[in-house]
Image (tube, rainbow, N blue to C red; front, side, top):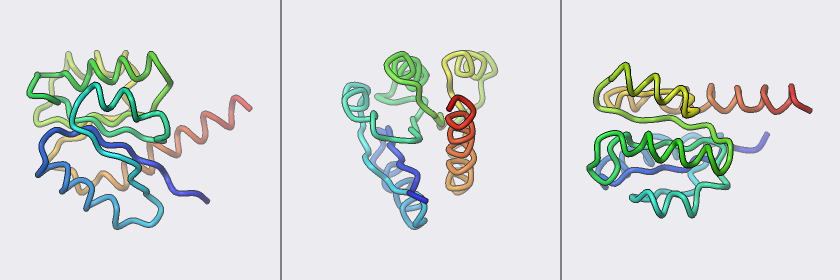
Length: 130
């Protein structure tokens, strides 16, 4: 089975390094890129199975949600949105925008398991339409 390809959008270098390190140690998960801006993300996310986006990229509250909407408009994507706080309105907007999961940054060590779950749902979905 081929590895799950993961793309990360996180403008905080500390968090980007922490997330990259915690995911890349798993042989079934392959990091294919990491960027810090919305523009870079829109240019490079196409080859990922799962995209992880910080909800506050570029220091703008819920800019990650706007990016998720744009990505799903361009190509159906499995997106995990990282957040420092849970906001029910943002979560509802995210579900409507196609966000697969919301994950608190304090729970980042759970990301490998969550990535596998999100990716497995994509495989099931792809098989059901075949």
